[in-house]
Structures are given as structure tokens and as C-alpha cells.
Amino acid sequence: MIKFLAFPKEFVWGCASSAYQVEGAWNEDGKGSSIWDTFVHKPGHVVNGETGDVAVDHYHRYKEDVALMKELGLDAYRFSIAWSRILPAGTGAINQAGLDFYDRLVDELLKNKIEPYACLFHYDLPQALQDKGGWPNRDTAYAFAEYARVITERLSDRLKVWMTHNEPWVSAMAGYFAGEHAPGIKDVPAAIKALHHLLLSHGLAAEAIRASARQPVMVGITLNLSPVYPASQSKKDRDAASRVDTILNRTTLDPLLKGTSPFQEFAIVKLLSRSLIKPGDLEKIRTLDLLGVNYYARTVVKHDPKFPVVAAAQIHPEGNEYSGMWEIYPEGIYELLTRIWKEYFFPFPAGEGALVKVPEIMVTENGVPVPDGLDFDGRVRDERRIRYLRNHIAQVHRAMDEGVPVRGYFHWSLMDNFEWALGYSQRFGLVYVDFRTQKRTIKDSGQWFTRVIQENGFEY
Image 1 (cartoon, rainbow, N blue to C red):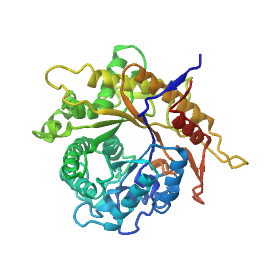
Image 2 (image 1 turned 30 degrees about the vertical axis):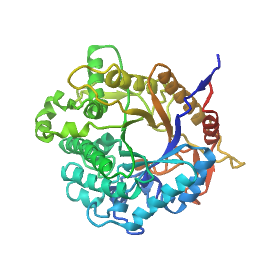
Image 3 (image 1 turned 180 degrees about the horizontal axis):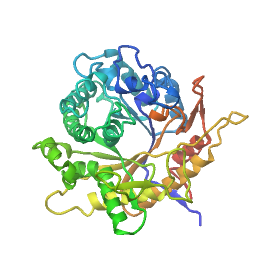
């Protein structure tokens, strides 16, 4: 039976991007180097040796890109700010040209009635701070708070929603544990230190933003989260799934929403966490007006003693649809949203760990990489992405029907861009980009998303 899935009148429809993936202009107008500038210029780190030096040239083409956002009908645009464009050395001297760029971008968005959502950090730490130890160095958290203050003083007269970090877990684990992302380090203690200091920097930055803001603001964070399933119902597989869930989800959710850390549950990191988590840290971290949920795929695991700490390995179930990167599993976003709401928000836990204030919830990233291409008539018929969007947004609506107060949905991404270690091999955008000419073309999925925004819902 087909029915119309209507969303609340105030529901926010948007798209997201990040500075390094779209801006280009990597060494222009006084910008300092980031760890990604360093990482991509070393052979072997990125598919085909590609870089974000130019990316999709958003730094020079932002007016054209905002015009596309207006054509799509977006309510909001979530973008990140390049720390090293503002403070080339990470601290100290301010680069006014960098501030001016974001000043112009915010004004252009508001002129076109698109609400700007700024994210202060999306993986691109200034190289100068990495040279001093990076995120495993506690001082970096305090440098981040100073950077937050500088940005807030300049933009908070117009910018109401501030996200401190995008996916701190990825910054720590992909950057310092797996080494697949910048800075390319493989060191378990460094990764654990990095994650804690990233979360601490959220609390310090939230404090700085609220103290410096020129109007009431919302301060949030976006987390990469994935429901974890056992490969079978055996006790070993279920225990493995529980451990992976702790590492993948609870290491960020618990500190932010409960003021506790699950690191103490793992003997191998218990001693480290005792010296790492200082008195007052968890209280500082637990401050949030808005929780951004980034969902792409579920995680299915089996018991495997070859892997330290978690004794688990991910598997890829057969018979399901896969994108260029992950399994496509729409029900996962429903299960994730309802799980977060029931375990962390409602009913509120009594006594120790109870929330004083309930943050708002948004889906801040959701999308799929498929091998799009221009057809003979210049059109991009990306039916797989439309199907993906329909099925995932329907699952968000399902969660809302069951009482989860989701306030908005942001598609990843606005346009095709640089996909980190995968270079330009994966296309996520509603807008197709010819990376050679930089010509933009709205895909069929973009036209579909526009109709959803106009009607504030769709038939399903």
C-alpha cells in the first residue's frame, strides 16, 4: 500500500560537505598545511596518487555552488571550516584572508535563505600541531578551543548552529590506529589518547563558543555510528558484537551523553585510561545541544581470536546489495535512531548518569557511492541513489513515528568530491562534477530530493 510520508513543518532538509574534500586552494591566501595536505603528497596513500589540491574548487566557485543549493531548494548547508586556513600554525597569528572566505560563504548562504551549519573540524588538523604530537597531545584540545573562539567571534552574529567535530572516532581510529587516514599512524595507545582529547576538545570548544557567541547558539557534534550485529546467535559471536559495539559506538556516545567512559571495560586499555582521563574531563565533555548521527551501513561481526582487544572480525553477508564501499541496509538507520533514543534519552536513567538536558537529534550524513556517469543527453540517471534515499528516509520517518524526535536530514554529499584515501573513485553527490572541467550537473537524485523538500515528504 502506497502512502505519503509527511514530515513536520519545521523539519530541516540539507546537504553536507567538508573543507578538504571540496575547497581546493590548498596553499592559497595564507592557508597553512594540514595533515591531509602532507598525507596526500606522499606516494601510496591515495588511490591513483590523487590529492585535494584542487578538489572541486569550491573556494573559488562557492557562489556557483550556493546557487545550486538554492536550485535544489535546501533549507540548510553543513560545511566544515579548515582550521589551517584560519590559524596557519594551529595557534597564534590569525589569517584574515581565511576568515574572509567563510565570512563571504555565510553571507552568500543567508542571502539565498539557506541556513549555515558550521563544523569546526573534519579530519584536517594543522600540520604544525601534528608536529607537536597531534591529537594524542592534550595541548591540541586547548588549541582547538582557541580556534573555536576566533571563529565564533567572527561569525556568530549570523551563524546559529555550530558542530565542533565531524566523526572524532574516525579521526582517531583511521588516523592513529589503522593509519588509513592522515596522519597515517598505527599506534593503539596514540589512537586512544587521540579519541579522548578529541572529545575533550569538544567540551572545551563548546565552552568557548557559548562564551564568545553574539547570539543564542546551538552547539553539537556529529558521530559516525553503526548498529552492530552478530554473525550468528552463538555466545561467542554475540559477545564479539557487544565488544565491537562498545568500541565503535559507546566510546563516543557514553562520554557525550552519560559522562562515563567504556574504556575501563577493556583490561588492555584500563591502565592507560586511568592516567589519560583526568578529573573533570568527563563532566567537560558531556555538553551537547545537538547530536548529529552519520549513518552509512551496519556492521556484522563474528568471533575471531586473531584480532587483539575485540577478538572479532567483520563479515559481509551474502545476498544483500552493496555500494562501492559498504552493504546497503536501510533498516540500520531506524535501528540506530531508536536504540540511541531508548538507551540514552528516553526513558531517562534515574540517578547517576541521568541527562539534565535532552539534545536535539539530526541525521547529519547519509548517502551512497555509486558509479554515476553522464548519459548521451547530459543527464545523470542515478536510480540506485534515488532508491537508497527513498528507503533510508522512509526508515527515518519510521523512527519518528515511534517517537524519536529527529529534527532534520542532511544528505552526504552536495556534490561529488575527494573521498579521502579513495581519491575521486567514489561519487556521493546529488550534483555530478566533471573533475577535469569542474562543470556541475544536478543528477536525477538531486531533482528527486528537490521534490521531497518542496512537498516535505514523498509517496512510499
